Length: 218
Ligand SMILES: [Mg+2]
Image 1: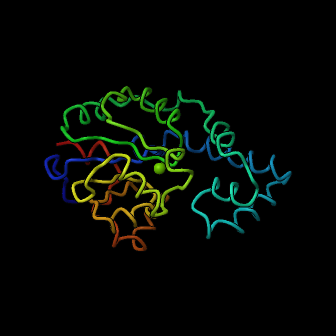
Image 2: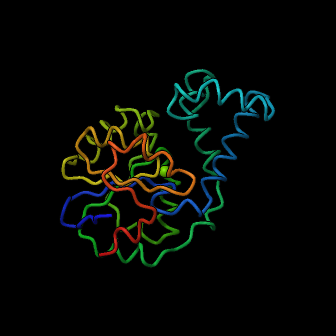
């Protein structure tokens, strides 16, 4: 695997969950459980009903929130607050990550389909809040999530950055399609569970890595 040089691109834009901290931290699992419970409670359905719900909407919608807003008139802020009520003690401080980000002279940003308060809590746990210029969340994106083109357009305006001078780090391969088309250098962080997706998305991936800290160690 070739390496990225800090001097290559001015801006580094990171996804938050399962990207700035590794998937094994498991907080995303807890969030996913809360999303499932929210849907089951809202629609008064059981596990089988939930399975049918996912099957019905999975292909045509970017996120669960999108389904709930467009089909069930759900208050997005209520949904987001409830599914982000999480146990942050599972996020582990990572000294090497902090050192690397501290040393790298690049402008650093977070771009998440979550909410800013969640981002703040994660970055606080990692003790790296002060190393980021800004965080762009789903509320600022008018609830239009990645991987929709509009989401990245709003993000670009908000951060006012040149995408050709930007590296985009993300664990969901489908979220790299638009960044690559818009001229960003893309880094995909895969796991044992997701690595089979490589072939489908390889045209949109410049670097496929399984360890962010190792990759950024210069
Ligand atoms: Mg993620």
